[in-house]
Figure (cartoon, rainbow over the protein chains, first blue to last red):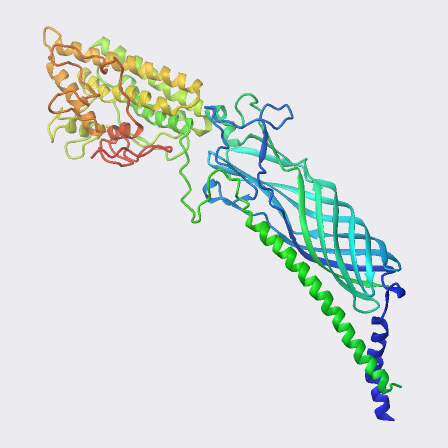
Length: 285
Length: 348
């Protein structure tokens, strides 16, 4: 009898798990509300060819070169789509920073047969940074960087379930606070960066979700994120070192004719794009 | 209660779940591999690909900052401090106002300097006029440079003693104007003052002409041309009056002509453009005040095209440092000059 109880005790829990794990498509295992977490690593496509554009004449169009007093291109050392290591182009650039991402999410799905449709909301942060740098003949470097302070999204989700495995695609709107940063080794001019703001974008991707128990599922997901980020500006004016020296003012490439009040920078690449590969875990009620 | 059949079903179910997980993980692992591969591929497309300057595998030293117009005008300002102090002391017995000496770098004091007891009214008036111009040059350059202006470095315009010769004595000894134990005091009389001025003036003209290629801003290039012209006027009048005194009757002071020519040769020796021993003229940019014949004037030292000559910044520093090697101090600037142009040329 004792042995029988013990046997019953041993097998009671697996028996329950077995019954749950044997959910079938007919049981609509993906119907219902869930909360979860997603985390992973974000990488960026190479925005090769991106650069910094200049508005020298103050007309709002970024289509001029910054030239020295002799008419030579002050940015002849070139641009790179990363962050400058030093003020010298010969040291090159660091690649854009990929980084970890972590999100909380909540959603609801409805299952009809094999078809699952639902909606998911997500909020979180990614450590990704996207930079572009220019080098002047000074020599000096100028790096414009953007990073995601936080990101929220609401996406639709549609998938095909085979028993406790769901293959799905997802697409929706994103809303993110994008910080725009500026770094330079130029100590003569004064720089003011602007354009950090909340931006709308979109996300799209797909993944696979596997139920482990009636309430717990894990999965893996790919997601593409794209935000328009075309508001970042850097205004270049005379720094204190220049303001007191007529000859330095008269020769500064950012301050000579046609606009002695200064120069404005913007990035040629107006979109902030990245790819996520994330693991997910959800609790289904 | 569980029976054997149930147990077998349980084992089957466990195996089934294990297979499901394996399938899932296999798929997910494949995805991870695919995307990991994609990111590896993306990393292969170098982010630096569009940088014009080709990156090198090993870092090379950062290139030195190129000289800008402020550097060139500051170089000129150092020379103007020297000239202005010499002429101000000679003409008025006082140096520059302290408000004209401040700036970046290390400010130094003036050693030597005294009012010349002029006998010749012409020399005295020339001295006064040049002094005012040189002080004005200092003020103009300081205004143009503003906060970028360098401070006056330490300046030696003294005669010194036989045992501790000042810069003028060292220059005169090197040129052979005086013996190796003599003392040359440019404030002693009219003629000594003229020779002292002669040491500087031709240097100023050649320095401004040589620096013209370094000035990018045409506004300041024109201003530098204005200073060059003023220095050329000064040099011309000093050379003229030396020549005149050398030939005057009665009492021609032929030693003045000899000394002036010796100083020219010494400057040529210092800056590396030495007189050719066989022809006597090739490379003789810095010419004395007489031609091939002692009675033939050579007031304006020009080449075959009638052009005055240039000195590089390094050559100018050879002369004011009284050293033909690459050094950063000496002679009239015992602590060197302030700014980014500091080193003389290596002509030894």
